[in-house]
Image (cartoon, rainbow, N blue to C red; front, side, top):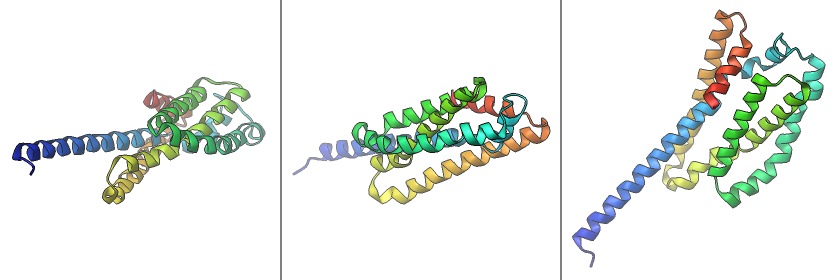
Length: 190
């Protein structure tokens, strides 16, 4: 027979575990909002074509943008295996580091090969997104999967909404300050 003290202690332990899970969910949702806050995304091509970077359309679509497609394809399968092998946290950190490198190169890079490296880093980040989307399913109970799915998707949509809204406001009132969009994004990711 289980004593009353053992029962009370087990209930406290369950409460602490629930608090830790709640904290983890909140952190992952906040990370999702911040990682998807990308004000420069809708204005990436005008930024790269503009006076700050001055790339031609042929360079963008022929030499720079294809690197994302192929790097995403190359990184996707290894990221699946690394996620299974190392679990989720290192891959989420890899995603964050890749996003930081992406926007660091967007702000400071000037040559075609630096933009190609930027696209490769973005391919790594987008392939590592699988860890973000699946991490909470490993942490929470199965009965909470619908809630967690709603939280994750809402975080992504909120981040995109706020990022795009801020971008539209900055571009409208600052007459196309595309570099500022990338600087804001880089500072948030840092």
